[in-house]
Length: 354
Image 1 (cartoon, rainbow, N blue to C red):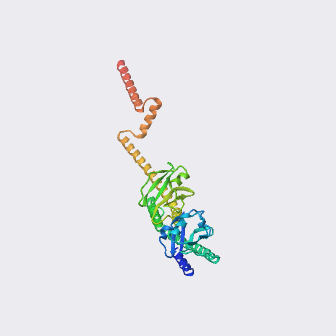
Image 2: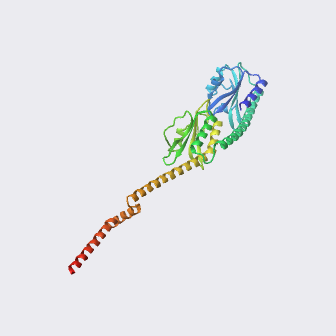
Image 3: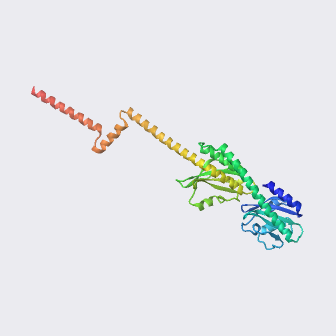
């Protein structure tokens, strides 16, 4: 992208005489200088500005001092700090999509003629078209690299910790973030739970309760939106949100649309694998609990056998006791006693007859 901008800038600089030319790209609500020509003071800092989405700078070609009533006072002051008395701005637009603006400036007053204005506007269109083509090409390259990364790092059947580790590493390095992490949604408790490991300098927060969508936007101000110091995208499987991927601490500037596109790519292709791994892990934990219960039951059976009574005999005796008010062993003892008394009576009668 920057190679394309430098080429266009050099071509314009050689064809048209001016004291200053700069291309500022829109990233979220920021205008960020990318390439410039001419003697300047501190363009990288003075022209790094916040811009309103509805600003005329992004919609119309403007000429100073003709546009002396323009509302973007910070922009005007920034150019005055660069000692420019006359400047012309052109929005970089293609198919209703605005990429930023181009600035052509002069140290001394220069009257603007119609031919020059048309030339500047045409140059702005050329830059926008070239940027769109360059971005499409870079997008295709990133997609190919992304598919290669998936093939090399994400395998069916791998643990959830392994996939999360690879995913946050790719997200952090790909967006030049200081930290990247994943939170999975706990449907039972209606909260987001941190899923280790993470990338970079990350401090694990407490579980975050999610009441509604507005609460999610409050927790993550840049949810699915570029232009901030943090960026968050949902992890979705079959139209169901299973968690979020979050990056923070952009090393240079703010997170861009390209960063958002990378996170969305990861979310699209890895969310299903993470959900499958989580289901497998839950099933393994359920089987382990069942196995522990079975082992405990077998130990009880062995213990009762050593005591001379099986669990089944114990259960039958307890049931008989509840039904008839006495236990099987008590009934057996009563029967033995009755039999003994009968035999004693018969013996007595036999002795008397003799």
